[in-house]
Length: 203
Image 1: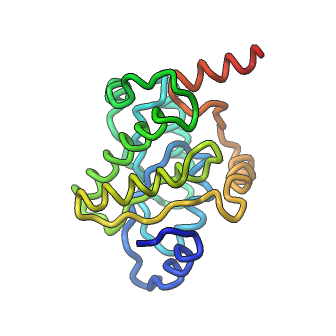
Image 2 (image 1 turned 60 degrees about the vertical axis):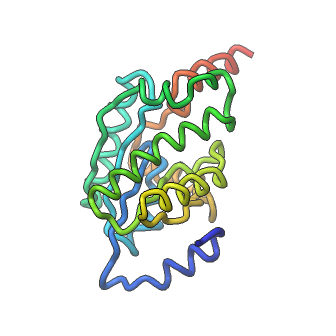
Image 3 (image 1 turned 45 degrees about the vertical axis):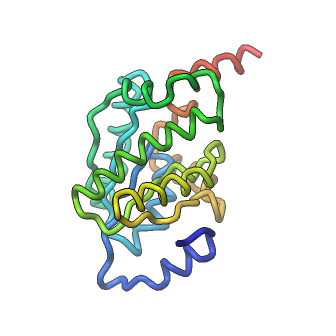
């Protein structure tokens, strides 16, 4: 089990690039997927899985999906998108709505989205699954990988270690999103993070 970025890079270097494994990459938005895809594309046949029930309102969900599809088209990367169901997210985080950023609310949010990714990975027989979530400095990488490995064990599939904020990944994602003229949202996605952002602005 890979548990650090150096071993992750060594693993990438060990992959036979003439026979790339398949990877189902969960993405939260196009800007976060830019650097992530840049790192992974030389080593994997990537399919993006856009599954983000946390995003609200639905108009915002669709706006981010369209931007993801536009970016992936540049690299001929297929995009699968889930049926939007904000209720699944609300059920998953019930009782933790007001916990704030980097709280149990976020842990449960990661778990809800990664579980759907793991199910899709199993269903479509991908070699690996992972997520772009870890590129954000507002996300807890340790939790993301803990959840990923637990789901891999539960579904008997392979999870790829994720820590894409390394090597200035977040800064690179900002640069790349500017280069591609991307819409870049100013809140995580859920209605609670949007409200918290508005409250910070008032202060």
